[in-house]
Length: 343
Image 1 (cartoon, rainbow, N blue to C red):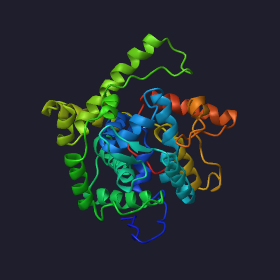
Image 2 (tube, rainbow, N blue to C red):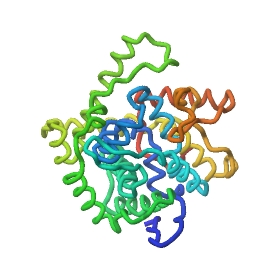
Image 3 (cartoon, rainbow, N blue to C red):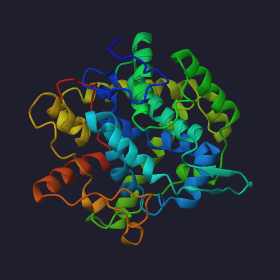
Image 4 (cartoon, rainbow, N blue to C red):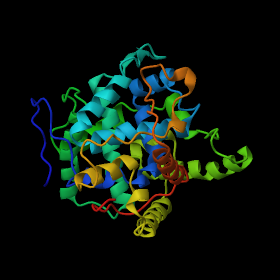
């Protein structure tokens, strides 16, 4: 293995680098097909779902919310020596997300167990995408990804107490949370029933927009149903047949083959592209980190709230590049198996 699990008492683990499997898979835009899967799993966790219900504006601007948030989320993997700073930034977004849910249970987004569950879903996102859409993983690769996910999590500066000590323990943890803790709440139902409002910057009649996104959202629900653990699928009241499983596997293989020749500039998130360029010496190590395009910034009435990432304004060239990339992303174009020669 190229990765090693950091010691529990260590202040900071080394950030991940281009030799890691996490770099290979996490920035691949095929992860976008898993939006309903990861959104539902995160919201099913009671404390996390309560925070989303009371503090999030996801339903108001789902595309913008996801498009901008993924930049710092990617940064914890791809920002190199600056990853702990990015992790601290994300941690800071969650300081005011707290309260009491409808059942009278107190919640806080920085509860270590809650924060780790969100991270665990991102780790499993990597596992699922690699298995279904990138040709699969060996058991050794899963263990390597587990070790890397510990180093990844350490960049947030959170307590390492909830983190399982091995891949086997993680599997037990995942199964236990799915069986005993996840619940179908309003935040989860909102994800399953989500409608994607047309952003102001999209020059398209609303009826046409709606017709385009209805099948995309339905397709993501179908993918989510197939990738849920059976106990989660049962809680969600979703039906899955052996025929569905065959179709999903065939679809995954088609996705893998269809994007073999897709350029890395499209296949990878811009934060990942920049990271590979820094690692190859093509741009300075201290080059400014890639920011989300300004047109996906939070609504003006929300920009002063500490829970929101507000992209910095950039040059016209940078904004044009982000526009091209975001257009591909929102259109659902998802590329092929990770190549380590990015950009």
